[in-house]
Image (cartoon, rainbow, N blue to C red; front, side):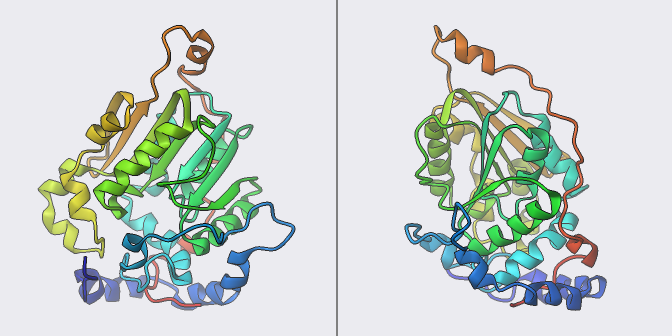
Length: 312
């Protein structure tokens, strides 16, 4: 697929948004970090952000996302992602992400957040389940640098892992909950199905998968909306069905919940062997721990929607 040139956002909307932001503030933050050094990691860290065994797929490296050349393989994307998300995730970013937290029906001991980006949902998962081991996985080491900075500021212990959601290298049946927020609309449909099959492999019997993303029915009805942002796979996503793909991947109890009409939340459960009473006990209505629902973005959301093209 060819990279789109001069999308509507870049031509018309970005100049307006730039009036509302502190581009100098964003640039100062970008300049304060040695992104390549931080993404490689240091010996004292258990996990390096840039792993030599991770191959970045062509569908990810060949496209621009959100008007940023090089997409998420660019430090500027890590800086600009949080400020814009607070505006485009209507009516409120925390409310939308909280819908995923509220839909969790297991008592998770291990949680994997796929395509975690800068870790906004990952942080909320750790706040909701402080005793659980929470791992955020993303293909962009730069996004993981940003995510770790946010977790450190919030005082949360989260493991950040550089990797491909299609093939994570984690053991079979090693997680109770697998989540993905705003990931599927940025992948081809075949990749989304592969991610669901990988999620199925990773989950224990009775484990739950939750996918938060754009509402596919709404996107089909408002096709003009797909021209605003540079999202190379958005029409392919809109034409597909996450529910159907969950069924193909083997999930049962598949449900779709509309979230403020423009978002949707898909839930599925890995089937439980009928005689496995122990597993049955883990799949029940869950009450997350009381938490601070503020997404700590190190005050970057206060800078407004991001300056596209911020570089470091």
